[in-house]
Length: 299
Image (cartoon, rainbow, N blue to C red; front, side, top):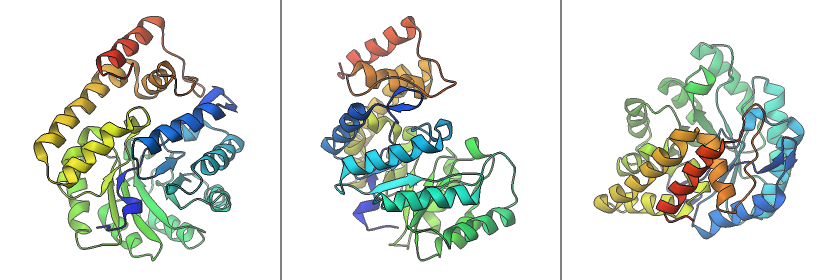
């Protein structure tokens, strides 16, 4: 697996801060990015699930890429999600990301229609041969209905511009299989999506995690990953227990995106506005998030 520090460690999938459905919270975006850099993150992933990418207009997606890349200013690698059911749209977005100075792109299988692995492979080969940037595969079958089976991922991994894979399946046997498949690949990163499995993944040999909670508490995730990479098992497990409390007290009661954005608003990072059709938290839920932040030392 990868020995390239650009694609290891913690790479948060950035929240898209909004003032209203079609208006970015620019000040909030800057605070969010600076919070991540100060917390020691190793890169940023734009337009992922945490960024509400499928709910953003194409115009707003492009503005977000341009603004975020400009604020990051080359200080950290920038990965941009280009997942789309339409190959032309995915390529257009990849070219825009490249023009803004992005480092790499990330794509999951096209969603909506179920695909055979042969169809998926054919689509991906057409896509990657035209991409202007290196790429990561993104396995998230809960949202796409389609999986990068390990055999398909292996074929795509041999493309010279393939940097690695992010797995958000939550399927440990599948993830362990990926670790085994790429154990001898020093040019290929295997990244864990679900943060509930971060310490377990890194202790088993993963290169890091794309952890949504690192928007809110970047240092916690960076420290967890580092402790696991250095074999400090007890410390990694204790830090992971705090990650679990974050999930149980903020994300699970309120819903992941709603809880995350409410927490970021309460801590003064950015607006808590969500994309449509999501609704903000009711007062009682908001009070619960506030209390959880106090208990976790974030307020």
